[in-house]
Amino acid sequence: MFDRILVPLDGSPVAEVAVSFALGLRADPSSEITLVRMQELGNELGYPVGFPVATDTLEAERLRCDTYLLTVRARLTRALDTIRCKVLPHHEEVAAELAATARTERSQVIVMTAHGWEGLGRTLRGSVAEELARIAPCPVLILGPHTEMVQDSKEHVGSGK
Image (tube, rainbow, N blue to C red; front, side, top):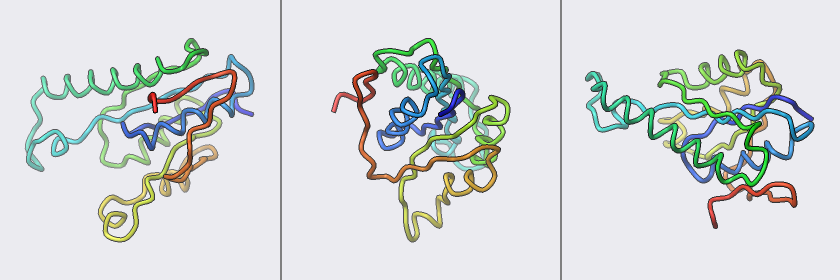
């Protein structure tokens, strides 16, 4: 099993399934899991492409990402001291930035969920999971979009569903 696990999250319930799998991959209860969320692009925040984003908007986005990660972390009933949260500033090359973060954090494995986009959606969005699996400094466990949440007697992760 692993002592240092990186879990990239995009704010969706689909992505959060990876957290429960990461808990199951820990070598022991003291193994560290780092939850990572990247800030949104300016156009995703309502700014036209190419326009600068106001500083207060960027600060609000960082706070929103921070709050999201802390909320996911708070859903865990145990192991809170071994779960770290990290917000990354937006980067055009998401997979490259996640690979760099895994390197910096000395992650032994990355656990994430793919959305399973096909056709035009995949062409437009690309596959961060697929690219990350090619360039990551460690193994990448990619869960399918229809993978169900895992619960065991030691931990509880979920969004109340």
